[in-house]
Image (cartoon, rainbow, N blue to C red; front, top):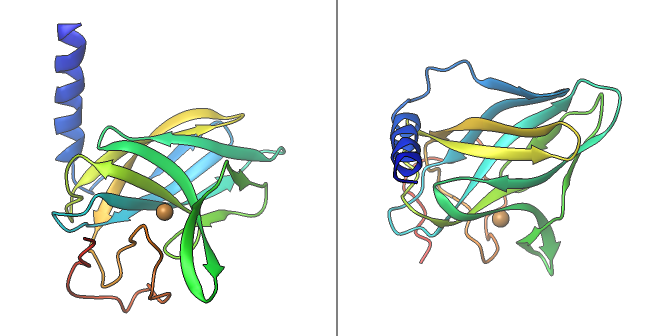
Length: 175
Ligand SMILES: [Cu+2]
């Protein structure tokens, strides 16, 4: 038991300091996971989100059914919905991946929610995230942490829907 814990800790330390100079695509069976990334979080932030592109190179549709990461208490599959003119996040049971039609997870759309962060997401670092596909099985990817942007997701709904490239500057305070 002792040894397992130590190994896991060593592995975690290694991956957290590995940085971004790794070729950044992963495969699970016919599923390709491209450029997993996240936004840096404020030190006080409880939650973060991870994004990526999922491509199915096979013949059959597949589904991302669960996610986990050692850096968060819990990880969920989420989408954004408009509710009375306010963008809100909702958990979904699965994210579909269809041959010939890549599924993009990104700000203001489908995303992986990291709940109860054990440490802030720091720009320039990376963290492991395990994706479980219904057919293709599990794959662990390294998520690159990029700059915070002006509108890091919060869990209560997002006032600013335009979270794209022009977002710069201060990390969003989430509590
Ligand atoms: Cu969310």
